[in-house]
Image (cartoon, rainbow, N blue to C red; front, side, top):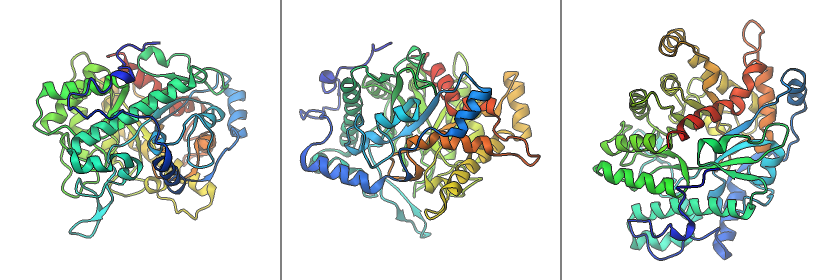
Amino acid sequence: MATENITPRSQLEQTDRLSIGKLPIGPLPQGLSGWWARVADRNSNHADRRNLPWCPALTAALEADLPGGLLLADMHTDTLLWGVDPLAFRESGHVDVPRLREARVGLQIFGGPTWTPLPMKNREQALCVSCESIDQSDALFPAQILDRVRREKGILRRRRAHRLAERFHQMIEADAGKDLRPIYSASDLEGLRHSSGEGPIGVMLSLEGIHWIEPDASAHEVEEEIASLRAAGYRMLALTHRFSNGLGGSSEDCHGRQGLTAAGRAAVRACFEQGIAVDLAHASPALIREAAGLALNETGGSVPLIISHGGVRRSHRVARNLRDADIRAVASTGGVIGIGVWWEAIGFDLADLWETKLARITDAFAAALAALKEPEFVEEMEDRFGRYDPYEHLAIGSDFDGATATPYDVTGLSWQLADLLARTDAEGAPLFPLEKLPLIAGGNTLRVLGKILARG
């Protein structure tokens, strides 16, 4: 497995050209701050059901018609944000390594934001967010509260990104090769755990929001920042999070939802060159459209883009959710869209029956599929690539442990796949045929990541 280009923890501070200080980029919070982070986790990450067995209906279907099984991949969990030990089973939250093992997950991408603004009302009295909003993430990094007073915000967010990377490496080191394989290169994606339960669990590091880069930063400065994040272990980067920043617009920002800045365009190109996946979760429609233009015109061929987690506006109309045009823009690059499972994106009522919530998540998959099956888009894709399969652009992007309420924890993913299998179209035929299920479950995620990482 390729581990070159990963900066050792002892050198992370030395590579920080912003001089983030002499304080160690420490492990999980201890003492009072650790206790507070765990309390926040228990009160923020809800699931109707936890610790579910692998779904018997899915087992029967696989054994009968798909004996090779499938690989299960989830493109986004925020577990590392909460100061919990990811290797130890916990009663709260959605993801830990024991539950990944029980869920037979082959690849889990660990993400995290460095700035989570509290929603506020704009002039039209609609809820939105901006860089002026209170940062809820400060509560999870209490040792940095004083830093907010005596340091620039950008430096603080950069330090936080490296703290999350430190937690990822601590998890890998503590596991000592027992279950986890860090994903740094395309070859690391080979031989991951399938539904048989054998093989290593791939884990990859992702970041939501590069907030410290200014819009007028030079291309060289941007490239250095992206290289620093790559050296820290990141292989997926979202330029924005819930508000617009120096790289581009967010889908929820109070003050406008513009496209890419000059620095944002440089960041996208740097990610392409360095083999880092560009994640457009939280991006504005304009940013998605412009990033797709860059991806389609990249030297050497189109580079796939990713939406790691999101809802579908056709299914549930909120500002954050994806328009049909957003879905098709990402698919046009050969990319993949991760459908989330949390209530704000899906639109189920918290009091709904468990089966109703699963059905609403399946509705979101169906809505995304409908956007991908639009006849003119199908014709365009067939003309461009010679072939086109709309099922090759759907994936799972749960947003587990993202201060979210979901019907299940990670052990419920097999039950969601079974619900997809049970859905029929207007003629009574399977909407998600069994032969397409391995693509949605994880095959699409692996294929796209493999192409991107091979560029690095």
